[in-house]
Amino acid sequence: MNVRTDVRMDKAQFFEWLEHQERKYELADGRVVMMPWVTRPHVRISTNVVAALLARLHPEKFDIVQGDFAVETGDRSVRFADVLVEPFNPESARSTDNALLLVEVLSPSTLHIDFHEKLDEYKGLPALGTYLICAQDDARVWVWTRQDGAWPDAPEVLEGLDAIVQVPILGITLPLAEIYRNVTLL
Image 1 (tube, rainbow, N blue to C red):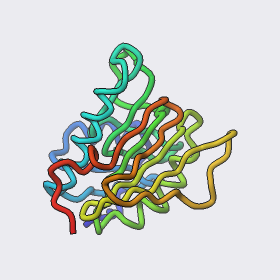
Image 2: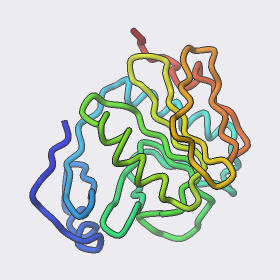
Image 3: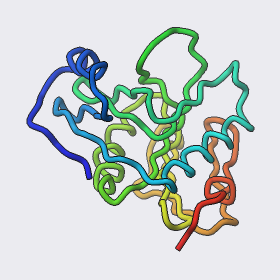
Image 4: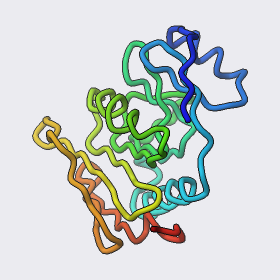
């Protein structure tokens, strides 16, 4: 489960503090939040998404990052998406606000965060074109795609291993059969 602490700090303090922590934390509206340990299906889905992206995107045009690279989502928030894609950036940075695609793998303890807090914060990123939430125990993906500068009121819900996610900002598709490869489903 996520543990919301009473510790509050700004982003600069958070990044300094984070360098000395063994666990994973996010900064949500100035408050430090400890993130849960993940399960094997969670890791497999994240890894499968990265593998699918690596097979489709040119490495000199895009950075594909899994889990440990920060996304600055506002003046007082720093998130760590399970997978992100941004334009290639040769700089040695520890964060971005230029993500094109963000992917979260749903955990029971992060359901309200992924579908509400992160959704709202991610929609505020100017470059973001697609946000995906992948279920862990079922071949189901919720897809938000910005079209003509606007986000839909509700996500497109794709179900079943035959479904295919469209990611227009990257000009690619991601089959659910690849996302859920070697994942035991209900």
